[in-house]
Length: 80
Image (cartoon, rainbow, N blue to C red; front, top):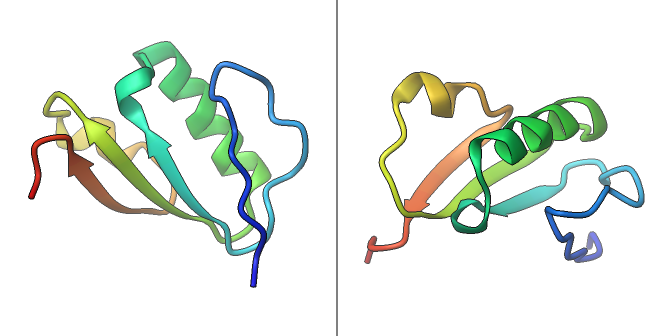
């Protein structure tokens, strides 16, 4: 079983992401610049990640979501 690590997205990544990480990215507390930074970090630092974006308060265009590596799902804050 992989360890659970909580990462503040406003702080630098302290260690490389573990192989096969499941990443829950709370986009409600982010912005476009920070999203770009974390897309690059996940792309470069994660080995076979699975990314779930949660708390999306707005509808993003398909091309914006397609930029995220290994995206498995997007859950809006108002989804049941």
